Image 1 (cartoon, rainbow, N blue to C red):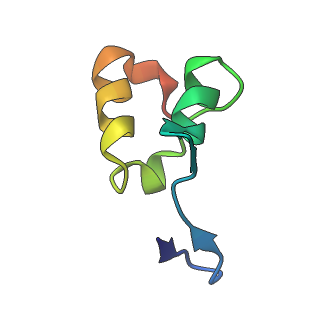
Image 2: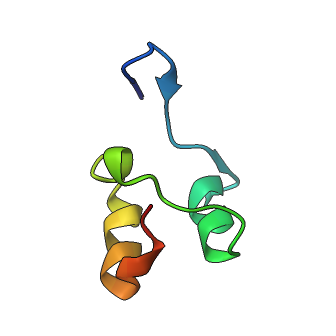
Length: 55
């Protein structure tokens, strides 16, 4: 968990072992914001599979 430039919390969310952000991206309901992608290991794997998913 970190803070971004406006001091908002940036964190990964999970429920019962499922990463919510990863689920939303996989379902096409969200995109990865490149500025913070380096903080999440799963987003690096997504970028390798489909480099166009980063914003």
